[in-house]
Length: 156
Image (cartoon, rainbow, N blue to C red; front, side, top):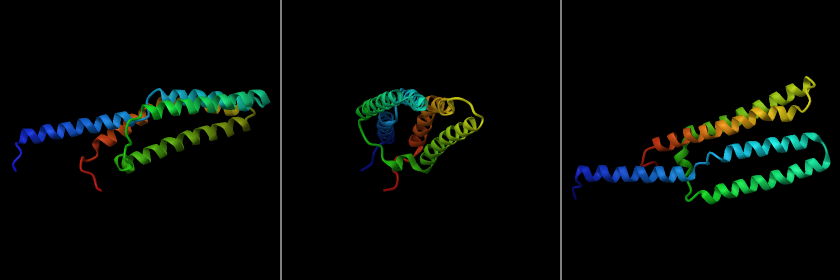
């Protein structure tokens, strides 16, 4: 059975378009990152007050806000991206992103505490929140490029 070259090209274009749709439908949306960043910053500030009712209220609001954000994100997803689509480069990017944010937050927090700066955890959380808000969408854009660059007939 011979398939005309134009039909093969059109079929491959359709497969690529469908793959892009699946990838786009499953990336963490841009609104997620600043939402989590704000929730995290408010939670850390509440805990750092050491005022029991503020800590309790902040904890409840954080948990409710994070749960709502995650449920909204999960409901938005329509399919499951296979982990093989992300590959080693994607997994490494996620790990590096996470480790850099943790290192910045912990390192800055301990440094500010050692210097006697008031509210060191809250202040240290600001660049971490900014990293989430701005770096999260950049990470998703990178992961999208990685996934789209993978071969269509990957290993099984």
